[in-house]
Length: 178
Image 1 (cartoon, rainbow, N blue to C red):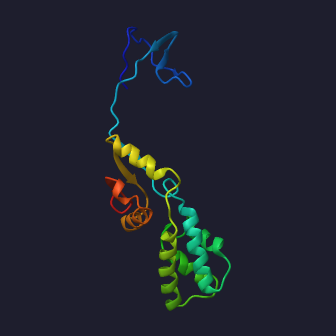
Image 2 (cartoon, helix red, strand yellow):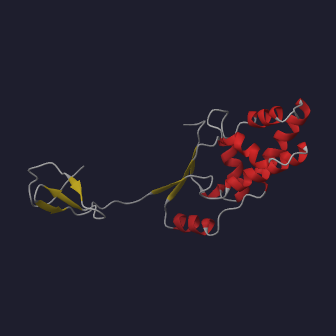
Image 3 (tube, helix red, strand yellow):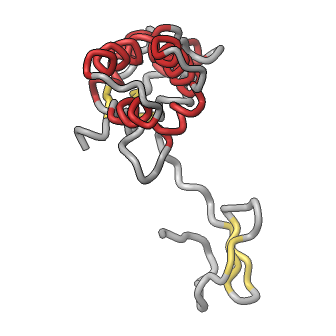
């Protein structure tokens, strides 16, 4: 941390003044530390549930899979994707486990459910209101915009293309590339 000011610091900083990040207490002395001028050149964004509602998209996909299977347990299927001890958040093995646990598994149905799940997961994705205008405004200011997500590249690109946001971003950092 770089400190500046006219008073020499004789003791370590013991606390930050609440809501005043430019004021430091050193013993009984108070120093005002001028902010360091910085130029912001880039803004990093998460993607799912930041730029668009991905939970609702997954619920729609789980509902359609349930419809195909003749079940009415979409939220239960979503729960399989949310398990910490299970497979990843995007792993189709969650669908397999759900089907097996509900006694409806077959290889043919599993393949069909995975295909439908992927289609429905992005079918109605749309940016939250004001997102596109905000991103374009940041671009007009000369800022570089990047996505940093735990999704894999294929899924990230698919979602960004579906929402029309893909061309706005300069970089995409994904779980499989980092």
